[in-house]
Image 1 (cartoon, rainbow, N blue to C red):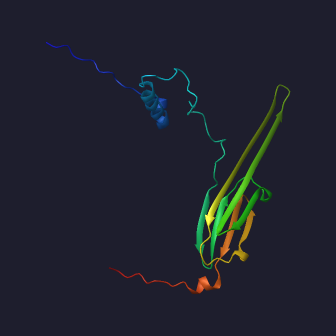
Image 2: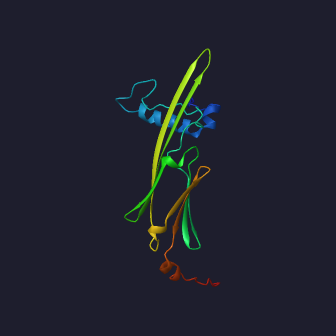
Image 3: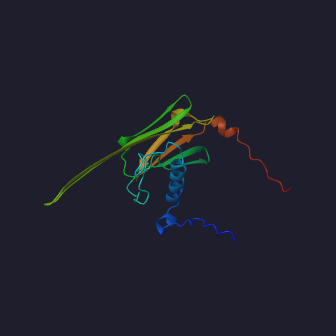
Length: 169
């Protein structure tokens, strides 16, 4: 009688089950470990601790909403913690560009320690300006961390609009 073959049992820890990226990283590591030349054991150059909280990280791009209102398009960008002097809005060759740079410096002194942190981040978002916009009337307002850019339609563009009736099939 042939002896039963033992198959390896794959188990995941609770931490890996909570973080799908940890499981994916282990699978990728397994693929690279199978190469004939192999890679050095231990921490790899891009090995990240995925369990570390990310709430302090700055987003690369701000959240942006684009809406068409009666007579204008509106672009709103969420830029919390920024000042209007750190934001640049310009139109060039049919492209609207919003740029910004966020700087934060924090210093904390106590009798037992001194903490100094600096963080910087910049972004640029570009949008194609639709036909029928009057570039001379574009406005940008910034209040309470939200940038609102209004792109008014030209009178000709408003006249060319036609509402199409939707009929049941």
